[in-house]
Length: 375
Image (cartoon, rainbow, N blue to C red; front, side, top):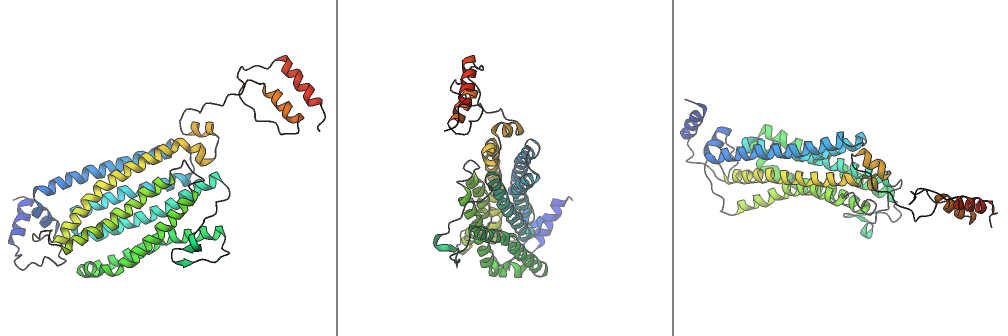
């Protein structure tokens, strides 16, 4: 007798006559697979394909940024941590799909990776802005308010950036503490964790709202400074992970108030909700990782504008063809420089000549103009 037959016998021998469909019972892995039959095989294949695709997209993008561009170590580290959100969330959803009793642990790990990635995205945006300008632009807050808090009238822009940093930094700290608290409760009593976990949801939602507000305000303020950095797109793909991992689960749990979801012991309607949630998360993380890969890859071509470096140097460091140089209007640059100097103006920058030669008359004119006294 193989393992599948043993699981089938053990499941058939259990009595579910008094099973509570509204309870918090979580079946074992063998009971879970036996209750779904052939659907379980399809879900496993789907999970393997989506997780492998997500990991491939994230690794390919990180390899391109780390080994094919001459960026700083901080830039590479922040980018890799941001891209680690999608494989971790996909892998956690796949594990929760296989082992239902790891659902809370999978959600905690996904939330931890997401909150750390949000803070790294904040540092990433500030690094790009510091390369473009030594002084960050001022942030205008409507009514001098930070969310619901009234700020002093004489507050400086640097202090506003400090408030935004605190708003984003609290996200991994608060979410980490709440996740650890829920995991301790699960270790003591899983039923209590599922039934009383709703009590900490207001703190979770408030922390997410404050953190996302700080990141969104920073991005919108630096968008004019970095028009080609695609900051809004990079922030959007991260915020969508919050929407799909939290808001989507709340919406699906709202279906429990209806009688549309069947109860098939030992699988309760709540477990059907988690099944749909994990499948959607697998598909959504693959699509978001692909979108993020396209956004970050395209922004590499605009490094000259983002980093404030010379266009030819930025193109060479990223393995791109050098941009065409601007042609002059046919005049000799030495003559133009002498004319500017005679008028008391700074000499123009050296440009590429259209014909590549200077005539003798131009040289003589340069000597004549440079000998004249300044007005």
